[in-house]
View (cartoon, helix red, strand yellow):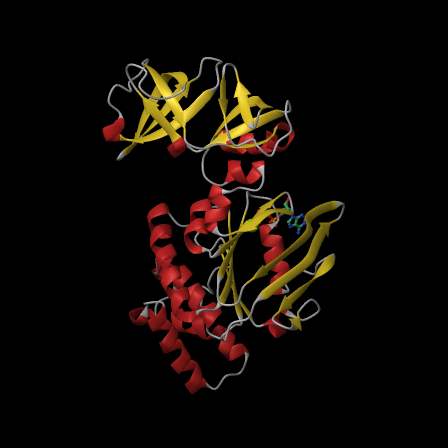
Length: 358
Ligand code: ADP
Ligand code: MG
């Protein structure tokens, strides 16, 4: 049984500081919703309020038709896994998983049965008698997940659950969580600052910035159709070109790129360009509209990242398959086409540009 989570007008103050400012979204039943944003954007606070670990300053929390706002943690029937919410070190794996069941006074025989099911589910059947310090980081987080799932929660709240693990293990666990979620279908809310994690795992992504929601959408919408400059800069990498709006384009020097049809003529604008939307032509001018000089080439395995300097001094980054690099070498003059750009008002783009450049 899965239940949607609805967060309505949620605000949270710590003294004078407003950490969460009127956040509203729904996590659909049975789906994975990611809360994505940089550190300090208020993600964990939202999750803690949903879990009942913190009270909101204002706003309401629902699970299905039932309001949760004034319920205790126990009454809410949520399972949570936090990066720092570690296992009980003096309990073995089976005891850790059974913890929520023994608190609820589930009969011993049923506890044992449930623990066996969960050990199998998280693929740790041979590990029931081990203690946490005899497990790898990835195994520990799988036990933490089994512990969270044991009492059959209505929703699962995950706060950077793989945050402390190294890149390879994270990747494996992500795939594993994806499979597990397909099997269980429990409504899950995943907090992460890692855009890859959000785009890969979530059905819907809620992008947060400074306590507010910037955009809610599918991974595809967030990446390809960012609603704000912040989202364009934070999700995926992008070069930011400074210019002003001329006939639906952002004009800089003698060049212009599209994507500014929604902006007022003459205003200052920033065009965000994804590295894979930049095409580079070497040699005589057979294609490409912008002239550029190759300043740096970095290999990324089968791709190369090419840093280009435009005549007006701005920098543009391209990513090309290595077999399209012919003639694209350090110091070479090349021609550049931008397949796609997305423009925003300059004042909206300031923080986003900092993120995108970083
Ligand atoms: P995130 O999870 O996105 O990194 P948090 O929700 O943890 O962000 O925090 C949002 C902001 O609220 C931060 O600026 C943080 O310092 C502040 N904050 C969080 N918890 C507290 C608290 N208990 N007291 C004071 N400030 C807090
Ligand atoms: Mg956090």
